[in-house]
Image (cartoon, rainbow, N blue to C red):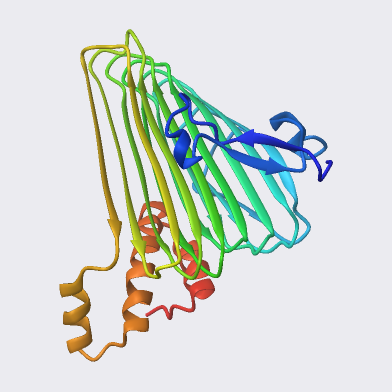
Amino acid sequence: MNANESTKINILPVPTWNHLNINDVDYVGASSAEEIFEGIKKINIEPSGSNPVIYDFDEDFDGAQITINAKEDSDIIFRFLKSDKDTKVKIKSKINDGTKLSISIVKLSDNERFYVTSDAVVNKDASLSLTTVSLGNKATYLEGKADLTGDASSFDTYTSYILEKDEFLDMNYVADHKGQNTESEIVSAGVLKEGTKKNSRQTINFISGCSGSKGSESEEVLLLDDDVINKSAPLILCTEEDVEGEHGASIGEPDEDTVFYLKSRGLSLEKIHEMLSFAKIETALKRINHEETTKLVHKHLGVEDD
């Protein structure tokens, strides 16, 4: 890679909000998206048998191109535990008819830069559930796309994060509704503090022929300091009449009544902020529903298990 070159990633399907500079983000060190993943190892996964299947990556890991062919219901957890290298992960999934695939991405490493992109084709009566816990890293880039090509296919994604000490997070999630009666739900929830920056793009794309389809997108952003920067680009595209799409957002400082009540119970403001931050992560951990992974995340956060 050439440090003097850059390429666009996490590209919004239809450019808009030019004044916010949020249509895409520059990835420095590569001249194309393909070059980012050149030379990294390939992993093929065709899950079967016991669930979940767990893949742990540590300090020797700098990236992989992962291909998943889900022929039966599967639960896969990717855990990034320790690394000081730039990490790049490209996940391509094929979810066969009637199959449920759950992918969890748990990022506890402290890299300079971390990039994960997930692209899935979801066939008839199949579903993809994507859950991400993002902690650490000076710069993190997350992307999740689902091609809902099969009738009655579905995609839901939940991303949780805590940003501290000038960290940067850039996200892009897209649901392309092609089959009839497809469903999607895109959710992110997290906390910004101490000079951090976050960009979020959420797109529901209702394509002609996807009649009866439904999609929703929402985000919750808790702002704990005055010097943080939050940018959000919710987008609903539609070339089909018989569809339902909705967007919601809750962005701002902690509720004053909640803070007052917790202070009256003897909690400091620092402890209150900590509790509110951890709550965002707990929702994702409940979705992952894996005790060992929950303990790893709690240890990373300094939370004591009962």
